[in-house]
Length: 184
Image (cartoon, rainbow, N blue to C red; front, side, top):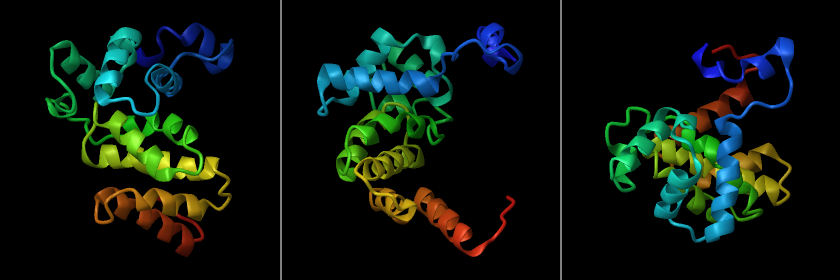
């Protein structure tokens, strides 16, 4: 598989030797570096510059890779998310949202605002809402909320209630409540 060509010798089940680099690790580390350099008031332009300085282009995928290419072509955010980006409502920004929740324990609105500034570099619509939801839910959990429904409710409060994203979350919650077994 092309996605694991470089890491296959050390990371496939039959010969694991450490943890391979991937975007699930790279983006939280980049977010922490962004916060270290610019604080919580970072801008989307700050994030774009950080990516160009610290993130090799080959380490970005789908929406992030398109946005990165747009940055290299001189396109400014938030147009980087829109221009020729068929992945703009995928989950990449949601994957990047963890650090925004971790760094705002008990402050879901602050976490969501920070995740929004990150997400609009690469995503639109539900791609942005997913990042905001995730950051808010994690912020509440990091603040001590132990009830999963409290975390989910906090996430829902920061996204447009009539968005496809909010409807999908509510469907998931309702399905989990009413169905003993669920096969999609």
